[in-house]
Length: 129
Image 1 (cartoon, one colour):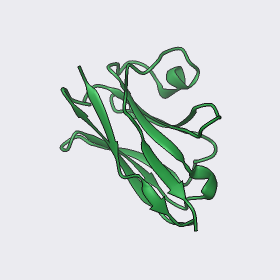
Image 2 (tube, one colour):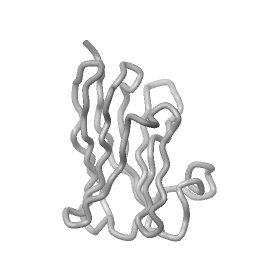
Image 3 (cartoon, helix red, strand yellow):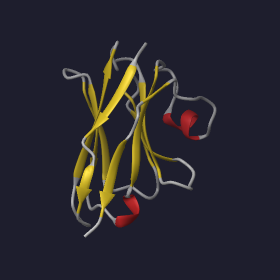
Image 4 (spheres, one colour):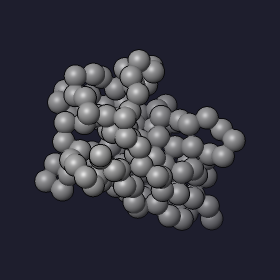
């Protein structure tokens, strides 16, 4: 059973940067679609980003385009979410999710045609002065 572990969250001032990491135990993230989500208490979960290495497809939510970058380090079997120019409204618990499929596109997950199979416990990101 694949277990997803996020790390890298914390407190940062507006305009600052953080890099979140998504790693796995009990298996590998290779040949998985990877998505990042965030959620604020009382609000719906928001899709932040997605990457599918087999076809190079990526996705960014409108609220993070141009500020966040998703990347994979296959040697370290880790997926990163580089977050720059952070704003207070980026404050949320960030979750990494993985699905053992490489034939779909990020839009398939964004539009709800498919669901990620594995989810992490989340890491808190707080943007505040």
